[in-house]
Length: 203
Length: 203
Image 1 (cartoon, rainbow over the protein chains, first blue to last red):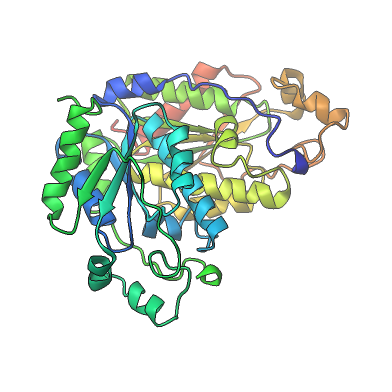
Image 2 (cartoon, rainbow over the protein chains, first blue to last red; image 1 turned 45 degrees about the horizontal axis):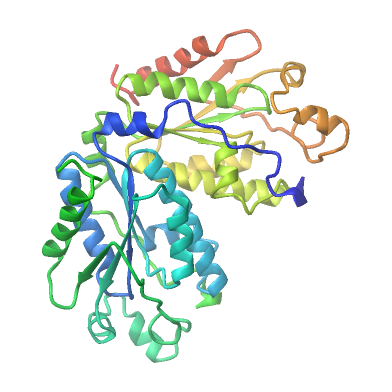
């Protein structure tokens, strides 16, 4: 069946539905898709949102570049093809978590608009929340929390987003966070407010 | 960074821990790994367990051959290499769900012992529950819910577990379910009883 690539399968619904799980959890499942340059604050803000939601009894999880890269996507590199496959797999996993009535945050550079649109297309209308974490390259490079910009400038690593690989900013993200001028807690609260205003969380 | 394969990343803990999520949910996270021949009842029993647990307020999810094959693993076929990668990815996803304090059931043939052992090794001691769904080839072939045995016998598909591909039964699974002689509900209750006796669920 090698060449058939999963043609002998058909979708069938779980007996317990997404709606059942949402009822148990008291809120909808959704994907908070943080995107932006390395060092813009995606992971920090995603974890802050996660912490605030968890304290309110919301069922949450964080998919994060570092831990996914050590696990599910450890056999992928940083070529355009591998980046696309990286985001595809993360999108499919995020979809499963949303089906489980979890509010799952993903914090990946996810530089290609087309890849993010594929993830959006996987999810029910209104449950993919694209969050642009906006920070100038100068800000990100000055922070350089992992020392990657320094390595990229020194030519020790290549295909680095913002240096020698493109970042395609979303044209109409659900939320834009200004990470140049605002702090983590303020930005996290902006996300929570949006979730309440848009019926992901009870108001 | 193409050739570096994720060397620029290090593990970092989520701010909200597995213990925090377990406290919110009121039970541990765990992986119920159902394994057995096609048609042995894995998916049916996994869904029955899921339903019983959900009714008790347990946070659950089901990863299932058909829906994973339509999503995360749609780019994999049925060669030995692809089967191994299939199970590896499912194991990594199951680990994420267990980290999220979910009791996640996976229902895949997962014919290779080594692949299952790799998944076991991903998970904290005592949270990987290997469940052999035991049914004779004759029983499975007589049921043939998807008509796959018929196709395999007719030579329309190859590498079919039990016909022209091996099934390596677990040597010391946590649970053995006798699907030849017992019904779905009885077997599902055996699983629930085991979870209570082994501190996955409160007794």
